[in-house]
Length: 219
Image 1 (cartoon, rainbow, N blue to C red):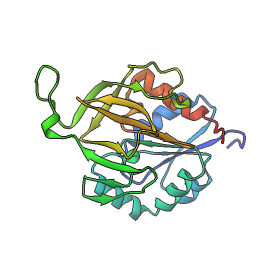
Image 2 (image 1 turned 135 degrees about the horizontal axis):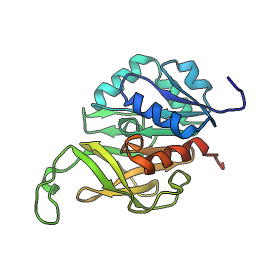
Image 3 (image 1 turned 90 degrees about the vertical axis):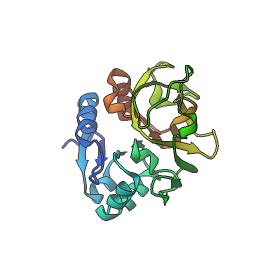
Image 4 (image 1 turned 30 degrees about the horizontal axis):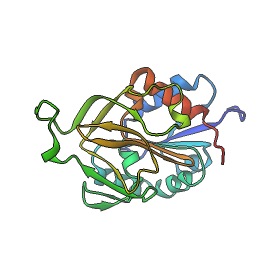
């Protein structure tokens, strides 16, 4: 393994769309980085960048994260290196989740909340389904290096019943609407968290992952 290439660790605690995420990163890395899917805390600790996916119910994800022995390695990575949370991996970065009424990792202030049933109608009065599943537009709230080359209004793929509700708007980078506006991406310093699935979002999603491979921190 060449020491000149950065190591990007994808955290395997048994609760992510791991095959798709790994394959997407291998595609966009183009020999610029080593991509490794790992359940070893030592490998996560040694990685230059860390990807924290997640899929399924929040209580199950947090239980498996604790059982895996990876929780501290994830917290350490989020405190020091480029760090990408995806789907439930992103939700886990908030303080509390309505799903399971549980405390999470508290790296962002705010909660993870369910779509409100009384609001779930489109402009024509048709009932919207929960889970929110399918392609939805992304609206830029503020510029970020991981959104370089991605247009305002680009569509990404979603599968979720819960979404971020940050305490303030200051860390919200991207919003979507279903039907009301909600935060899709939040970012601070070295951390970027995205609710939807870039690995399933065709060229725009791959551009985001490529931007993460190339991301150099400025602080």
